[in-house]
Image (cartoon, rainbow over all chains, first blue to last red; front, side, top):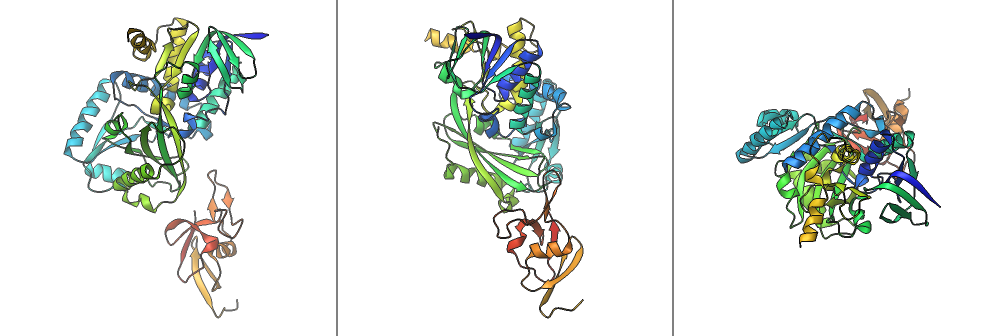
Amino acid sequence: MSESWDVVVVGAGIVGAACALECASRGMRTAVIEGRGIGSGATAAGMGHIVVMDDSPAQLALTHYSQTLWQELSKSLPADVEYERCGTLWVACDEEEMQEVRHKSAVYAAAGVATEILDGQMLAEAEPHLRKPLAGALLVPSDAVLYPPCAAGYLMREALRLGAQLFTRKVHSAKAGVVRLDDGTELRATRIVIASGADACDLIPELPIRKRKGHLVITDRYPGFVRHQLVELGYLKSAHSVTSDSVAFNVQPRKTGQILIGSSRQFGAETPEVNDRILASMVERAQWYIPEIGGLSAIRIWTGFRAATPDKLPLIGPWPEDESLFLAAGHEGLGITTSLGTARLLVDHMMGTKTRIPIEPYMPVRFARSVADA
Amino acid sequence: MHELANSVTLTVNDISVTVAAGTTVAAAMLIAGVSTRRSVIGEPRGPLCGMGICFECRATIDGVPHQKSCQILCADGMMVRTL
């Protein structure tokens, strides 16, 4: 016996939950398969920022589009999602980085994202615990933070309320319109959305997704210690150096008063233990920017795995090798931000509706072709 | 009230409290009738284990937040605040 669905979504991290809600809200008969907990993978491990990022025009378009969707949704979010529009300060150490601040401000303005340029004194007033002197910063007031597992939980509950069904099972295989679960159950689906992050490779081995390990530290509650998300301006440089391990200064105030301290990136490290060397250099980096941060009490340290693609853009759209398969995976460090945009783009595309921003830069076919041509 | 021979006086949330030397800050906070801290949703908390394990007794002591008040003895002039 097998059941028949319009859509089966594999994975209920924040991306899968967003896709399930988008499908259910358009009246599709939707099933979601999640073998562990809702939002228990990269969703639970990440920082939870809703940020505009400009590593590429396509990244800027998707993050900006997604941020506007979060803003629309923010009024409906329950308190446990801890959504807070704290803004991001991209911190510049010297005059060279201030030039980058001005450039970044112009790029954001061209995309319709408002920013403010702060000089060193304005920055010191905005964030008194930052080291002095610093050259200044770019403030992106629209950026926000939230608590990702609860955000995924909310999206999933909404999907279920609209009629979606959740199967708490592991997926054995997903192809040719059939999803087979580990207990032998078969779900027939017109469309299968693979939203299981780096685990998508278990179902489609040729996907170009690699795990990129990260470390995070969270402190006890120190309300007001920092007021904005703080990121070093060199972040994109270090975050996207694909060849080596790297750390970059990224600190967030949580609504609870806790401070989240990141970040690190490693390829080729696929076990979850905390690496003391990486942790030490990450904390030293934070301490260079915020000397007093060493006096705070950390309560937890953990690691997680981002689902990284070679061009740092997610895979959104049909998988050309199987007409029933669609992908919503490979969001690396931006899955919380881009979950809503991903879901909207994917479902618009599946329905033949015009997408709000072009979907082409994210279509998986860009990798299928390179495989075929090789 | 009978003046204790070996007493110390400290301030707990602006309340002056005199206790016997050797009294823990957690006990002084109980005497003052204040909670040690407030939870994320604003509920009052107090010492549970009294032996430095449960972290429920954290308070700001002389300006340093998140001190385990059950493990620290009162001192003259100490300033204690609910976290």
